[in-house]
Image (tube, rainbow over all chains, first blue to last red):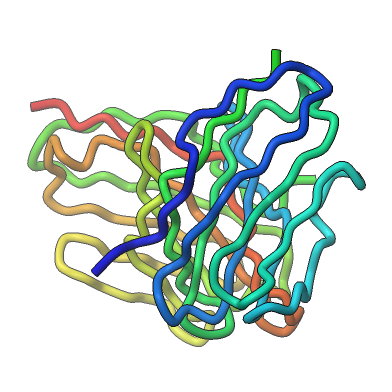
Length: 113
Length: 114
């Protein structure tokens, strides 16, 4: 079956631009997570959805970051007024229930110039 | 403050030998641990996991050991194969926290030499 799909795979933005990153989770998966992975580091948690409800957004680094999952499936991570420090790989993961094994997409590599 | 630590950035092992990857954690609330494998330009792929109520879990060539008193876990790969060359991440969850977020280490790059 299809895994977690993320688009675009690569995004180049000029500083100050807004970007939107999309995640299609595995069909039927209730939980959806966003992580940020800087070069040479492990992924770091950004936010968590259970169906359409955003239950934890404690990892979002600033109010420029916003995530939504309006119908409980596809999710979008939006970054407003991008900064150079936002350059990273953004990973989406989904899980059939409440946590434990999470299945990851290939990520979106964002480069802010 | 790193709650999950992988102190070896890299490891080289001869094909056919055992690979041992180590992970330490500081948060005693962690109750479920996972290992992920990552190839370049791909997302992390789940490998094996262990609950804190167990001390060992085995799946084919992969075995994870958990020492709760030492807050230490390790992944053993026997025998190692060239296709095992990848970055391995240790991750932990505190199910009682209600968020189910994974906390990752920085990873260990394993190179299996033919």
